[in-house]
Structure formats: structure tokens, C-alpha cells
Image (tube, rainbow, N blue to C red; front, side, top):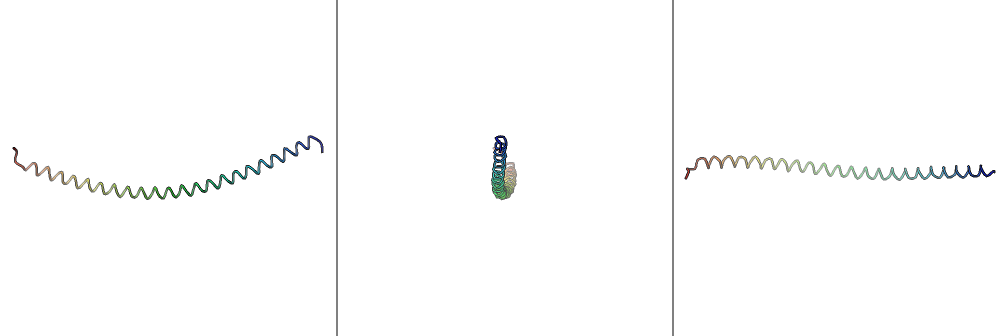
Length: 85
């Protein structure tokens, strides 16, 4: 083998090693992405549960608001009927 063919052989070997390393890294990245996907899905379920809970709280607050409006209307009527002075 000549010096140039030995150098070429080393370069080819280095490129093959680099390609193998790149595939290993891509495999690791794929695994991490899969893990992150599972975590994001779990977080989404939790957010959906919180969203439903906040909707229920919002509905309760709307009901309280309506009740206070009715009380306010009643008190306004009572004050209107009271004699002045």
C-alpha cells in the first residue's frame, strides 16, 4: 500500500466512525424526544384537569355574582321604601 492509499484508508475509516457516532447520537436524541413526548402528554392531561376545575370554579363564581346582584336589588328596594330623614 502506498502512503496516499493508507491516508485514504484512514480517512474512510474515520468517516465510517463519524457516521456510526452520528447514528448513535441520533438514537439518543430520538429516545430523549420520546421521553419528552410522554412528559408533555402527562402535563397536558394535568392542564386539562386544571382547566375543567377552573371552569367549575368560574361557574360557581358566576352563580355567587348573580345572587349578590339579587341581594343588591332587594336592598336597593328596601332603602327606597324607607322614609327619609
